[in-house]
Length: 87
Image (cartoon, rainbow, N blue to C red; front, side, top):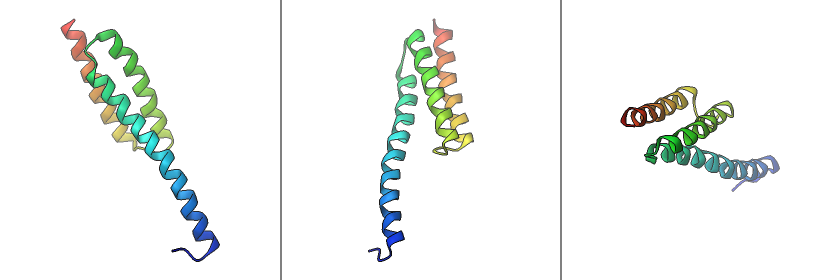
């Protein structure tokens, strides 16, 4: 257990940040899954815009790396384009 005052504060701060980061990462994963699960083109386009926005925000805040966000955006873009071909 921490014995210094600064170490105790670090424990408190890291616990708070862990909750925030976990919620943000969950939001990113959920938004991507929603796009991939959608079969309707119009619904998928709306979810796509939201997911790209969430991914970009996660990148700027340092939650995910730039290439990871690019890979996820590419994946959901391919799904969106496949829906457009079917329609």
